Length: 164
Image 1: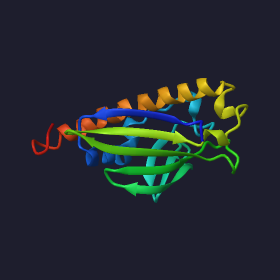
Image 2: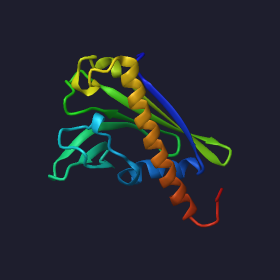
Image 3: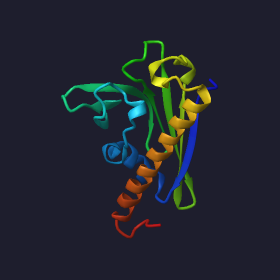
Image 4: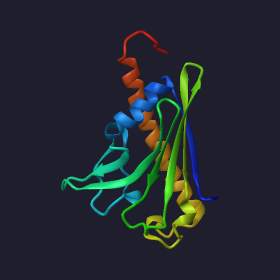
């Protein structure tokens, strides 16, 4: 799989705190991107529930973005990622790794499987592969910045024990 996105960011909080912010507070730090909406009715509210990543739409409908295949608190999270327009054979996957680095955490997102989505597909907006991956990577960097702000505020609010 050569069509993948790989981004990292160091966050000033322990891996368990960052992991918890990623999964428990995704509705707070997630920033929708009109180019990469899951459904024509997006954006909704993102949540991890019942072993899935879902988007709850304002209509009350729930769109399943993907099933969680790995849940290792503070270490690793892997889940499927699909848009409503994907055919059944179009599958991408997101792996998020949480690595302790000093008193903080390096969060690495690898979004792979874009080879399964043909270049002319609406999800790619007719961008050449390198442009599409760069634009999607920029969005993931923005998302991680939101996660960093959330994890830092959660961590600072946790009291003095373990504070960076």
